[in-house]
Image 1 (tube, rainbow, N blue to C red):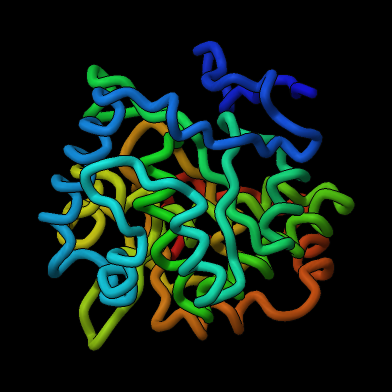
Image 2: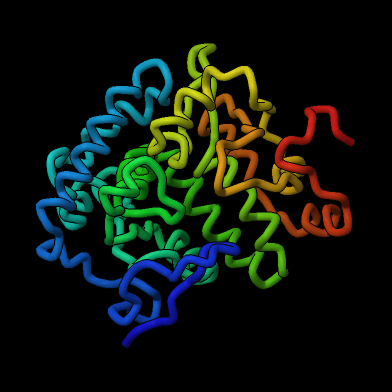
Length: 278
């Protein structure tokens, strides 16, 4: 047992997490008993800070589903979360030691299993952490998996990812994940709201993404999204906006192979490219 660790992009930091515990699919036991009181306190502080910011900024669908996570004061046991999640949408969360390779990641999503990092950031990383930790994954991602349409979209993304891997198109498809599941915006009742996990778990980017005049906010377009680069170490300079989760699901129906072929060789857009860039 055990798998090699995964490095995040061009980061020179050593990989986090104990990959010696990982099975062939990169899942592992949560080992909830290993969390310290300091770990639980960090989770509680992060939770309280983010909850206070949600009204008027976060998707109402997210806010409505958040109580389904259960524990606020302590890191939830994944098995407890799964009892309600499986009943709601047939999904479950599984522990992983950290970042995992693309194909195992896609396979888990296709099987309606969402990988959640099992460790939490150190107190000195409270404001910012490069890699996703258990707070980002649980608080940011899991509530919307209780939404049937969004949950189906994530599964469809996983299925599409397996095909993209065979076609050498993972980089293009990864941008769709980044600009929807991680950093997506949605209009609800005419109001702009955040639904992406990277926004919802960030104290600074949540208000910035919705209210700041600085970033570009464009209607979600598959070709534009797949051609747009992104940065991992700063607030996003471009966000893509949907009108509903059903629209998101419908946009990703069908075979992406012709689109990949069309986009190959076309110039990419910078993360801050203007809306009318050719």
